[in-house]
Amino acid sequence: MKPTICINENIKAYREGRRDFSASELNDIKLYLLKYKDQLETTKFFEGKIKYFKVVSCFAEDYHDELFRHILSINNTAIAIIIKLSTKSVLFKKNDKICDINLAKLANILCDGADLDGMTAVGKFSQLYQNTKAMYLTPVINPSQSIIDRESEHILLSFCSFCTLLKGKKLSFQNVFILALQDEKLRTILKDLLGVDSNYEIVKLFLEYDPTITKSKYITKYTGSMTKYMNE
Image (cartoon, rainbow, N blue to C red; front, side, top):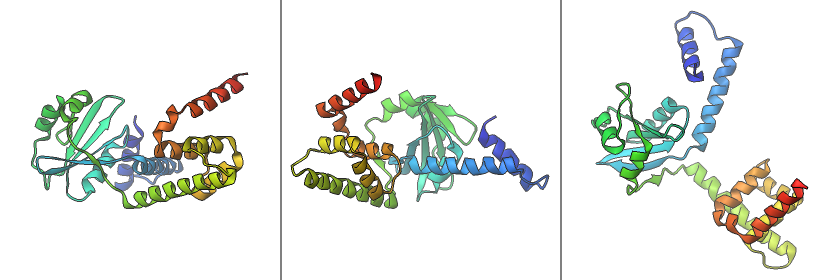
């Protein structure tokens, strides 16, 4: 039985006054909320239009009911679409108050889909991609995340300038990345500036700023030498 179903049944029993939550159930609910919070914070939402209706979509493997509620709560969102890559399926839900589109027909047209349970429609991701790859979708901007991203980028570029001054010569972005990988003290400085704890976050920031560094011969040579060293 899925965790969401168990939690819903426990909440139903509590509301009907049959019993209180057990300590184990409270822990399950707490874990569930934490995982959902993480899902919500790491999910990217994209906005587009079907006819004159606002559509918001995302990729997600779990918490579909919760994400549907969140998406449809975004101002004037008429249709929510969730893509589940593990099953290559597409789920549709609409805001009945502002949208009169027949979801089953929409799913059938876009991705060879059909009605699922009277409230949700489901289709095939491969067909959706073929039929909508020319559709213009833009990320939904989260103002607070936008500020964090700009600040992180500023810190990273300032760190690059610091490394250049420290070495007394001009350094490429790739060379700064290698320095950060090699020098624990420099990594610690950057982690303190960013307010993060793991090396993974450092690497992630570099790659997000410039994904092409993965193709750099300097990076390939360094990671190759490290792999050889670790295998010896």
